[in-house]
Structure formats: structure tokens, C-alpha cells
Length: 444
Image 1: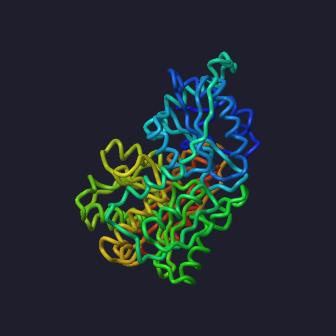
Image 2: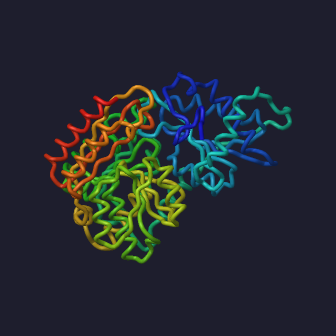
Image 3: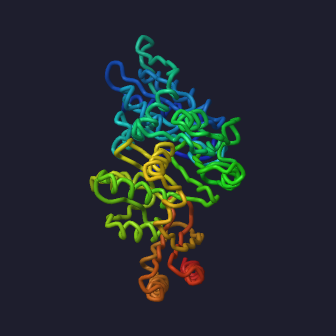
């Protein structure tokens, strides 16, 4: 479906540049209210991360929803998965997230959840876009929406997160460094792990509106690795700015990415008898994950890149566990969307249940060396119609001889083609990727 404003994960861009402006957000709030807020007593929840522009967009969306006659419940700073949870439990007709996730403070965006706490269907997004093209009309004054703040929002979400592991399970005895990226989890995450008994050293918990994701969090975990070693911690947890991604660090200071975390959760579920089928990854998931799951007789399928497509495949196949290398992991047997805190808890629960360190649990998966090169392009490019590229891919695959794979993928967010090669031999991977990228560059 061709959409003017919505991408694969809502609307996102640089603050002050259309459509990420106060004027547009006012109209977006009104259009959303018109489409989703029909019926008496309809309410929409609004939550945000910690970037400074969130105040501006929160007010604009609130005004637009009120003009459409829809009540508003304001959560304040709240992780994206927390907004999904509260949208569902507070019986709202929709939830709105003001966040640009792992981007810097100069960007912002809008994501939506349905009343069930899931991403909006394409047809609903299309209806909102159609409404945006109409002139804005305010309802009569006696029908304007009212706004209220949900004072206990963070506490409700904390209790939900704790409920996703068995009540008899304790984290007592674990020392954890938690990096909240100066983002939306700065209140909830440390409390969750402390209340479950862990000794918590919290960093990235002093947001000032400008420091979200800056030199911290899942996109820059170097500080966390250092702190785990300095404090002799058992594990480190790095969340991103809106709390839907997680990367972990073991006691040796080694990174444990989303593929490895997905492997640990899946194997633990299999041993419990609660896996519910196989696992869904993406085209970018490491080949080592696929092979490791196969060694445990766990089926593995690849969706297109993006949590939206992982969720779609999970729903189509009836599976429960899926995710991306970035650490966006979806446990549908626990919640409706990717949740960094909940995913980390599932890993900590496995450590506790089997009395193993994170380092030991990840040892069952061997990551293949991987190299990705972004080749700039102009406009649309059909790589399938480029014989030199297809010949180069075929030759590379023959040389890898089943011990690796090649992927060419036009980016959905940048004017580049991503050239990715992975395999058993790192030197060969680098050589094949460099050679293939040069062929692609010449072709485009």
C-alpha cells in the first residue's frame, strides 16, 4: 500500500521538518480521533520518551484529539511497550507513542497501537491519512475531549514486567548494571530489577531532553561493557531510548546481541515445553542462530527486516518468539510487542532456572563472521535486472559452498543497497563482501 506519511514503523523525521512539526501533529491528533475515537467515552493514551520535543508534540496531539471530541490520558515518559500494555489494560481505543526510538534527540516520531496493544493495520493508517487531507473541523464545545494524567502509569508497568517471570523466581544474588540510554525506561527499568531482588547499578538515568541515546544504551554499549568489568557485575543490560530493544553484556564484558538472546530464550522455552513452535528472525539474522536452533530441532524462518514483519509472521505461523539482531525481541506469550525489559527478564529467568551465567548460556550459539557494506544509489534500483550483479552473487555463493550466505537488500530508510556476506571464514567474508560491493557500485 502506498502511504504518504506512514513508514514501516509510524511517522519519523527531523523535528521542525514536515511532517514532524507541531502544526502537523495537531492535525494528526484530530485525524486519529476522527478515525479511532468514534463512540461515547472514547479515549486515546499518549506516552513519550524523554527527548525535549516530546512536550511540544504531546500538547499538539492533545489539542487535535480534543478538537475531534476524544478524551486523552497522558502517561508522560513511558517505554513504548508500556504504552502498548496500558492502552490494552485501560481500555483505550488507541495508544500514541511520541518517540524516535534509538535516534538522537533532534529526531522524533509517532507510533500507534490499537486498543489490543498491537500495531495498527494498514487500512487504519490509510484511513488516518485520508482524514488528514480534509479540513479540520472542531466539535461543539460541549463535546470537546477532556485530558487527564495517569499518575500511577509507571507503577502499573513495573508490576506487569515483574509478572512475566514466575513469582517464585528471585534475582537475589545478581549484580546488574542497567543502562537506560537516558530514555523512557529511566524510571521503570532499575525499579523492576531491584524489586525482584537484584543489586542494581543504574546509568543513563538522568535525561535532560538532549542526551537520549548519546554515548549510551543499546546503540553504544561500550560504557556498559566497561562498567560491568569495573563493578564485577554478573550481567549488563542496555536498553534503547524508547525501551523496545535490549542488548546484554556478560560478566566477561562480551556483548550478547539480539540473535544470541533470542537463542537463549527459545532454548529455555523448548526445555520448559512452552516454545509453541519455532522461531522467527529476519533476513539479517546471523546464520549461526539458524544453525544453533537447528541443532536443537527448533524450526527457524526469516521475515523481512523490521519488527512489524516479524510480528506478522509470528501471527501467521502461530509462533510465540521472534526478533532481530538489534535486540528487538517479541515474546507473544508475555506481551504484544517488543519489550526490552521483559526480554531481559526472560534471559535472567533462564540464568536463574539453570544456574548458568549468561556467558555459558550463549555458548550454545556460534556467531558467523558478518560484513555489511552500504552502497549509495540514486532512486529505485532493480538488482535482479543487473546481470553483472547476479553473476557476482552466484560466484560468491559457489565459493562459500554452503558455509555462508549472501544478501543484497535495498534499504527502506536510506538511498543505499546493503551488501551483506557472512560465513565461517572471516577473511573470506571480508573479501567476498568487498568484491561484491564494488560490482554493485559499478552497476548502479
